[in-house]
Image (tube, rainbow, N blue to C red; front, side, top):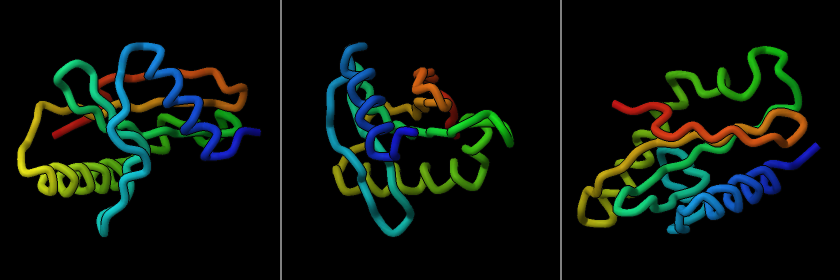
Length: 111
């Protein structure tokens, strides 16, 4: 089984191969953590990486519930506030299920 850090590295490498550029990793504040912050052209992309050993209990997609989404939104607002400007942004999800197959979901959720 892949660890959380290994899953994030797999997701990071995958997104880089697909043209995104790195901005920051593991951004933390009092609201929570964002695994990866990247750029896709002029768009700032907040990336949540989810790994599940199996699809029992819904697998990785179902693990990003409304509460987790609210935490990610608050953390992203905090990050953008510290930058002094609000760029065009989106929230992507990268899912890894057991066998390390990668599923990238651009613009997975938002306000």
